[in-house]
Amino acid sequence: MFTFASTYLIHQVWALILVGVCARMMSGMGSAIFLTSLYSQIPLMFPTNMETMFAISELAAGIGFLSGPVMGSLLYNLGGYVMPFFIFGGLAIGITPIVYISTKYT
Image (tube, rainbow, N blue to C red; front, side):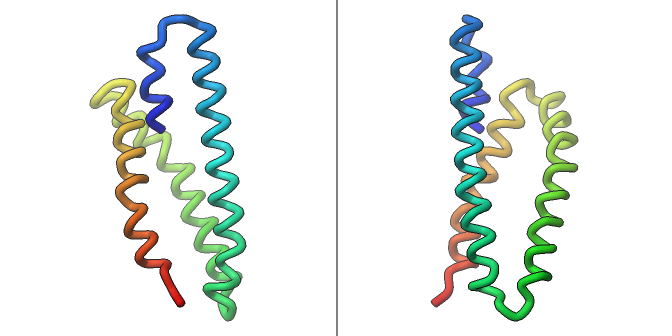
C-alpha cells in the first residue's frame, strides 16, 4: 500500500513502471501467502462448520472488493492521491494485532 502512495514522487516513466510492477508483485505474493494460510486454517479452527466459515470469508472478500473502490474514490476526492493508500494501509497495520489476538488458540 505505501509503495503505491509514493509513486507520485517518481517523475521518470521507467522508474514509475519498475516501482509499480515491483509493488504489484509484492502485493500478489502477500495475497497468495494470506489466502493459502486462510484456507488451510479454516478447517483446523472450525472443523464442524467449515463450509459456513468458507462462505463467510468469501462474503467478506466480496464486500471488500465492492466497497473498496467506492471508499478509495471518496478518500481520493477528500485528500488526494496518497490518502486512500495511507488510510487503508494504516487500517491493515492497525487491525493486525486484533486479528492475531482473536485467532490465537491452543
